View (cartoon, protein in one colour):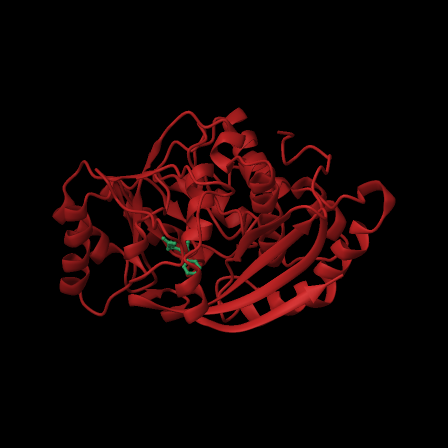
Amino acid sequence: MPRPDTPVAPLGALTEFELRRIRLDLVTPFRTSFGSQTERDILLVRARFDDGDRVVDGWGECVCMSEPLYSSEYVDGAQQVIERYLAPLLFAAATAPTISTGPSAAAVAPLIGAIRGHPMAKAAIEMAVLDAQLRWHETNYASHLGIGRDRVPSGVSVGIFDTLDTLLTEVSAYVEQGYRRIKLKIEPGWDLEPVAAVRDLIGPDLPLQVDANSAYSRHDIDHLCRLDEFDLLLIEQPLAEEDLLGHARLAEAASTPVCLDESIISLTTASDAIETGAAEIINIKPGRVGGYLEARRIHDLSAARQVPVWCGGMLETGIGRAANCALAALDGFTLPGDISAASRFYARDIVTDPIVLDDGHVAVPEQLGLGFELDHEFLDAITTSTQTLRG
Ligand code: NPG
């Protein structure tokens, strides 16, 4: 099939978007430096293509949270920007002569590029189109990427707790389950002590990393350097999203590699962060950078510069997790990603084959499209609203 980043559009016409909101409870509260979550309000996007003979649907998942705490995007805003601005631009383009057969995934970003920001909303749209495009050609994302591996090592993200005992009980359970890397959420007042306790618990060999979600400032550089004694794989996004200089200073001062998450919003920011020494490792999240095509470009750039990358998680359902798992099987993803089993966050997933942990790994999905089949009955049962947009 043509590559989804090749500007050809052998699909039928784009006829419909459905914006569906679902509600899923988390199996256990997940606390980070920016807040605590007990449930998710998730926006899914369905894109329908129709050539008169065949109708194919593709699905995307918008990774933003209900409130603008991790980044400026939030679910109501994402739905509104898709309804008012992104979908109309794509419907208008679908009737233009040059792409009368409908936009391919590669056409999406240029067509909606005039709208500033909103990478997570844009990524959800591109994802739905990519899923449809792959299904139309009866192939899947892993094959399209030319993936040779059939599994990737799985890492788990562990939240902040009120007591060290609860944290250690939680970490022990994940170690028991076989996770290959532990990520601890930290914040001022919850850093050296829990990290020391967990390192003590898991021993020197299991990779351990920390994530601060921007909770520190440049004044904390000396304090953050004290994490060096715990032989961490990396420290993720300790400072503000905009603070590339501060991260570069920390990278100079600390022996623990500095990894950026929130600061990396595009290929350009990734390139600049590498060049300025602000990022020694990059967390690639397709939603944060506007989609899987840009994510791939950041992977390729990082590989060329010999910068390790890993695939971050946003508590995705089986839709986003399947796509992340295929992406994370690219050769440049040399560190374990946040691709934990579906059961880490949800009692039941919206796909028929939820991701499971096997020997500390998750299997690269083989299903069509981005690599999942929906459990429509469950999806319908947890749907809180549905909005259909037509061109
Ligand atoms: O496995 O999906 C997962 C969770 C990984 O910790 C994780 N994500 O900052 O990277 C992060 C964090 C996050 C959580 C981000 C909630 C946004 C909301």
